[in-house]
Length: 278
Image (cartoon, rainbow, N blue to C red; front, side, top):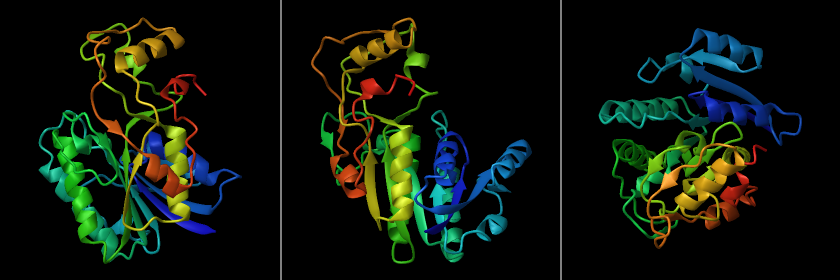
């Protein structure tokens, strides 16, 4: 199976996906186009047999859109957690989507976030739960998701709402180590990069048309207990959380239906397996 994959924002996640798509055991014969803002990164991508396009959000899209016809287009451009003025970001992503559609892109995969549900709920959330974004970033993601739905008659799309992302070289226990923090009884929602890549490869191979999917582990321990175990396993100073002994609260992102639709059994369904470094 031959597939052209265009990835905007060729960063940490894209690196893992690109390696999977170009590996000898990949289920598809992929050609990859990746965007970067760096001349140095453009050279590096070329050395990996990836066609690199220098592009930053808001730039003219003409050069990038030359690669869109018949392609799977993955949009993964985080707006930045500290940025509270994201109207411009949102409109630029929407304009990029419209330009890709005009260039006859075949399928758009939008990397979204489970923060679209906000942080105030104690509910178990399925893919059909109502969004309640609280941060500027979450509100931007909801607006972009809604725009994709509005153009669904013109292009197939898949929204992937990711929980907190973990990898062998990236675990939040490292930044929390040794700190005093509140709300140790809050439930965690995490997903491992290995399971995200498997999901992306599955959606690239067999597009799930106009679907919104959750990518999250099956278990949701209290963060005060979980991050203490993680820090201990990583030989880091333990974080100290208040309220860890209190009754568990916070949202639970249920991804059961999504993993079933993808025909994937997540390798890291238990977050305690995520800090082993494997």
